[in-house]
Image (cartoon, rainbow, N blue to C red):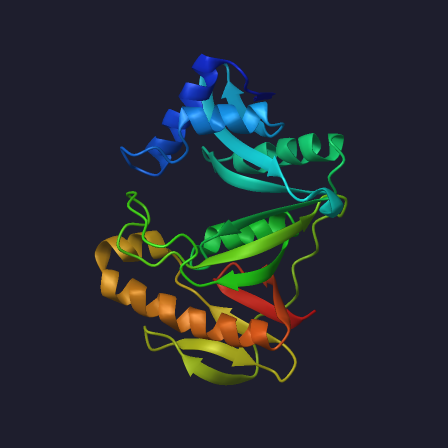
Length: 242
């Protein structure tokens, strides 16, 4: 697998098409013109290539100068390519003087949460309600676009997974009748669906109920000065005080 900054017209067009295929939409997720502007302004469009096959791509721009940070706008990859692609993006950022990276993701997608918080060691620092407004791609259509913002210390190693699962008092019940929020008085755990993409497709009303339920836990927890630091294999977020 080769990870390369893409600068040519044909390569940029391939990446724009790849993003549209991943998000199952005929509308550009990021147009070729936008990608060219990002690259020309000093950002990076990085492609993962398995021979001639495009297996993943990610795009980043710089944050404010004083922050020594970059913002990852979008990433998509074939199975098994996500981690090395993200590490290639980290190497690019470090090589340009950045020490942190931020991006957003859907709080209900547990596999992304586990990748971000456990495999990379990022921390969720913000919850935003309906971040983009209505989205019309084949993955998010019909749902509100709540997003979590993660901050990744590019110089740190991934943190070890915390031992044990949720324990303590059940504070809220999930739409499926099981526990949603559990607290031991210090830590809070919040459960999300194991596969919200399939749930949206099969039962949009249930997915919308999960969105509002999880939103309530996170907005209260963040107002109380907490951050999300981990995601268990069975879809429980861990929220701890900063």
